[in-house]
Structure formats: C-alpha cells, structure tokens
Image 1 (tube, rainbow, N blue to C red):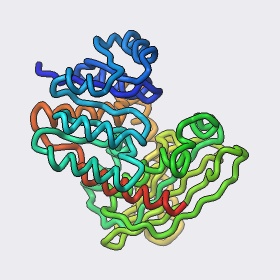
Image 2: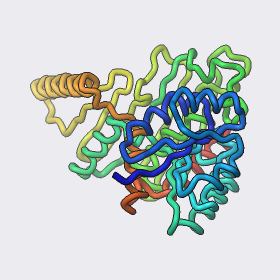
Image 3: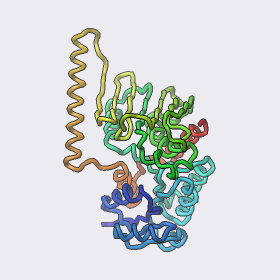
Amino acid sequence: MKRVDVVIVGTGNVTNTVHIPAWRKVAKANLAAVCDVSEERVKIVAEKWRIPRFYTDFAELLEKEDCAIIDICTPPSTHAYLSVKAMSAGHSVVLEKPMAMSYEECKSIMNEYYKREKEVKLCVIHNFLFTHPLLDIKSILNKKKPCILSVDIRMLHTANDEMISDKTHWVHKLPGGRFGENLIHPIYILRNLMGRLNVRDVYASKKGNYDWVNYDELYATFNSEDGKYGTIHISFNSPRTTVAPLSMRIYAKQMIINYDGSNLILTTQGSMSPGKIYKVKDGLRITMQIAKSLSKEALRTILSKNRSGHEYLFSVFTNAILKNEGMPYDPEEAYDATITFLRVLQNL
C-alpha cells in the first residue's frame, strides 16, 4: 500500500494530544519525523511516539525529507514563514488554525499556494467541520436543502478553561487573547454554511476575575452576500462547557435544526399546526429525537466510532495527495474565514 510521509513541526500540547494520535490512525500516512527548536523536547517526543527522525533545524528538515506532508503545529505567529518555506520546497502543508494573524501573512501563504498548486496541496485545520455533529447537520442540509435564514452559534467555556486560566499561556500574546485562538472555529462554520461573510457588530466585555484577561465574553453578528444572518457568542463564564465544543441553531424557511453541544443532542423541527394536541405531538416527536440522538452517540462511543475531526481531515487530505482527489474544502474558503476572523479581532 502506498503511503505518504508526515513530518510534524512543533512539539506542544496539540501535537501530542491531537495530531500524533490522529495521524497514527490514518493507514496511508507514515509519521516519519518531528521538528522543534528545542532539542530536549523533540527527542522526548520522538522517543515517546517512536518517530524515527527528529530535527531542530527547519531548513535541514526541508532539505532531507522528500515530498512529505509538513504538519505545522506551532503558534500562529510562525505559520506564514513555515508554510511558505515548506510549499516553496515542494511539500504539501497541513496548517493548524488560524491560518495567520495578519492580512499580509494570509496573503503570503495564499500567493505561495497559487504559485505551487499544481505540485503541492494546502489544508488549514478547520476540524469542527468534520466532527460527527457537523457531518450529521450537513447531511440533513444536503438531503432537505432548506432555505437557510440564519445561523446562531454558542461556544461555552467555564472560567477553568486551561488556556485562559493559565497566565503564562501563549494565547494571551495574541490579538484578542483567548479569542485569537478559538474564535476561528465558529467563523469557519458560519462561512461554510452561509458563504462569504460581512462583519456587522462586535461586542466584548469582561465578567471574570483574571487580571491578565481583557475580554472573556464576545458577541458578534454577520450577514452573507445573499441575505443570511449569523451570530456568534463565546463565553468563558459558563457553568458548563459545550462538549463539541459548540451549540448551534439553524433557522430555515422549512425547518429549524438544533444541536446542543452540552448534551450532544441533535433535533429538527418542522412546521406545526395550531392547537394543544399538535403541541403535544410535537413534544413527543422531539422527545423521540432526543432519545435517538443520545442512543446514536452512545453507540459511537461504545463501538469507538467517534472519529475526530482531525483524523477525518487527515485521511481525506492524504487521499487527495496519493490519488490526486479533491480537497475537503478549498483553501480559498479557509482564507476567507481567516480574513473575517481578523476583522472581528480588529473590532476588539
């Protein structure tokens, strides 16, 4: 079986807890090497995961590794430099979100990709699009083809969130602080469901007690070119976390789709006739959907079929390279989402 080599750049938490475990489940991918500026850290990771080669020099990596996927898991400030260098050396790139933290850096990445797109591929990690809830929602939309009016997204976190509660974490150096790391998730979902977005209003406030945090509540509104409306609310003061980690409500002319990321429940509601009996029937129908949704999630967990969005995305991207198949989504879509993300941060 033909396989493609994967080299991971960066040895932080996301590499060890998400990327390496996901890549190891992709049959056609071979974890060939890992790179980090810290020789001590990169040796530990290589030994722990039995990765045969390691580097501390990115230029040496590009020279010695042949036609590999370069998976960039470093902080966003390094994304443009590393991805442009990798593509210019003929390597395909998997790039953790957000694509970059400035318009100029995003443009430099896309310009290099357009120059090399016949020989390399680029994938920005928009993994929530490939989680089971989003795939189920997209399946409903593709089957029913409703006329979407608006999309509301909630991302709820407690004050104990591991990034915002850590005063020394690198996210606090980003524009927007913690929002500079996670806001991109709901934005790329809105972009995927609604098309190109315009930022209408952005509101931010602080309700928590961390003196190193400027904002811990964010609310933003958007509209698309064809008249859809979208809202995003991110909180770090919630009594509970949305596990997915988001909740969604999609309003359409024909139906309403609800996903409760706190309880992992997906339901749909169609039109309802007036009268108490119809309200009772509608309530029973929703109750049955809740039971079905919980049973489905339990079976996925028991049968270990809860494939992560990263694993799904890595598998599709690997096939795109080996079989010259289509990409899971166009890099232009990721670019558009990132530009919208940067505009929201600019409003803060």
